[in-house]
Length: 341
Image (cartoon, rainbow, N blue to C red; front, side, top):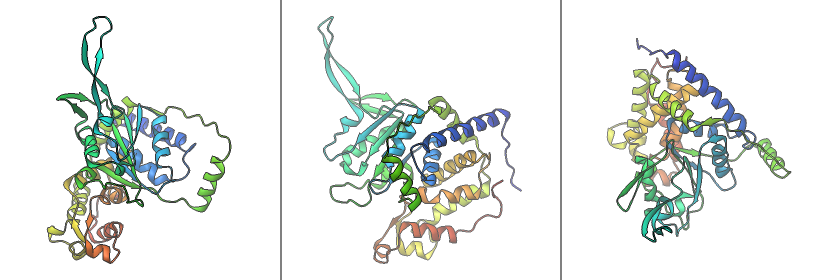
């Protein structure tokens, strides 16, 4: 029988603070964002883990509004970069400029920080800029630092990159390479609302509004929550289930026939790491100090959808990544233990 570690008194107090912060964030978000509960939940998980996420959806579905509103609710600095084909790496990271000291008359190089130096960075339409500029984000995302002219500048923590991309416009876009896609924990898909929700959006946004948003959570709170996430225990059966799902997505593992037929490349070990971390955050947000199979299953789609590369056979038969993930969930045996408590 698997043993489950118990939360300490301090952990319970921190969990209560996290839950209270979550309720405050949701209350403030709902003043602006209508419905889209799954999208909001996944953004919340991303913040609690301290990982970067991408939001994919057609224009007009409030991708940018969601991120800007989240930044206003949190007591964090926020910057937005509109990615364009002529954007240069220095436009993101910053650059050295020559500045004259008015008292001495001496000139010296001074580093002017770019917009990447913020707690929350909105990388809007990240697939509209060339690979060289996209790569300028990699060091900041992975190492939490930027190097310019051989000098390294650390990022202020917490630091999140929330990127958006438009899936329907291909002309003039530069698809992100797999190595950079893998840096994003989630690919969150935002879809059209139902008729009633869309009617509510239209009526509420075409009248005079004076929405006041209250700050809900501080940066120090988020850093504490991130440490708490790391302490959440995971039963071995659940961790092995997460690893099995990821390994089963690879066609060279001698696994399922539909994977060999439709998949060129499966998910990396980083996918299993993110599944576990996201599962821990989701458990805390649901008031539990133990990860269940349900936590893992509910997050498989945003974790895997940008990490499974389909081949020509899948495209010719219109087999989507979503369909492959659905079949993976049906095919990989579910452990008997590890249910939500």
